[in-house]
Image 1 (cartoon, rainbow, N blue to C red):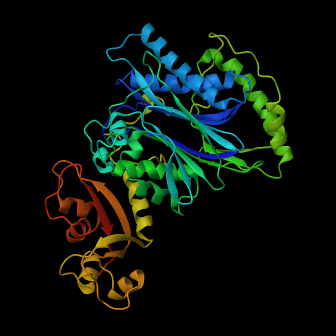
Image 2 (cartoon, helix red, strand yellow):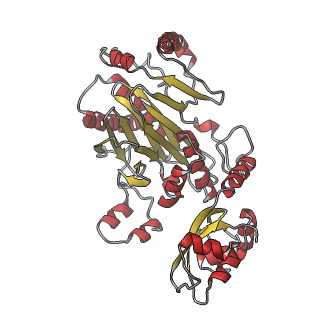
Image 3 (cartoon, rainbow, N blue to C red):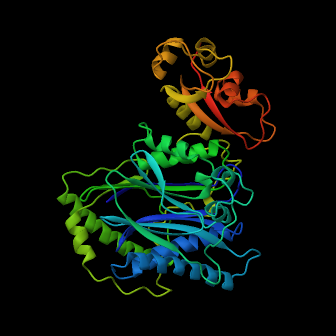
Length: 466
């Protein structure tokens, strides 16, 4: 029914991960949940986990209904109540809270709800369309015309929320639905992703042909967010709805329940094994990969039979197992920045080796970036700086001669383009060495001199050999 990629990372600055995600099938459709906890260690990460688990449990325990908007609204409010109960039973120095974004996929629609500033995007026709609007002070100011979009990006209060889970009185969840569009995919993410990547960077990664699966796309998004600074926890789920009787592919980092639930879990495994056996006999062929990915054959007739059955009564609190589709890494497993000197989601190679391999792979493919012609420029000078030929510049830009005007936008063919957030005490020469390019190239591409400031975003073209 869907193809899924999902991952979370603590980033390169914080030692703990307060993000959490879940995704999996429910009686109402396939659900994806992303939460960003607040309150610090043992508060934010607990709140995010409680919120995601509460929504998943609510959806799995509630009988089928046509009012999916009301269902999601109630599920989110149940998550708010779960956090409040936890706060009352285990007081902490800081009250825990969390954002949440939930997307429920049916055969025809995606129904979604959110509180806070975690987002849902639709990716369709090579365009990234926001479906949610942040519950933030800056968004209110932007909507009121008090600030511009550019000012909103760097506003000192951009992280101030107007509502979140864990508050009294309860928040007002935003709930909506939209028809599934052919070829569309959907991205759920925390501000650690969209705050570190521009819209253009996200689109570029999602369109990359060398990233064939949603999992590969998600890992590339997180890696680039880390390369851009990794100043916050980063979480993303990328979902591609598929046609009926299709295959679901997703990575499942399964979290084991407590021992007292193992008997019930064993029974569930036996039932699943029987169902899988039935599915395999009905399918011509099934495949499993050896890298931790699971491929499940989806038989539509079997799913229809299951959906027509009455759900069992909700389990009591003592009988309640941890929800099986737990996919987020538990907080204790989150690597610290010292353990991950370079961003990577691969467990089969060191972070530096992975980043180098991906950079090398990207550099084999020609790409372009936009350059604004400056006073005194000519094609020969521009070609010399960026290590390309005048002929290539003419061809890429459709120029009939060498005449160019100041202010004209030229596409410059280069080996690769990176984006870099300047850190404290970094110099242009150090940045140039890091990416294997020239100082003059960076200065020209960004219309800057040697003076750069922390937090400044630079375009880093990697040029060919002259």
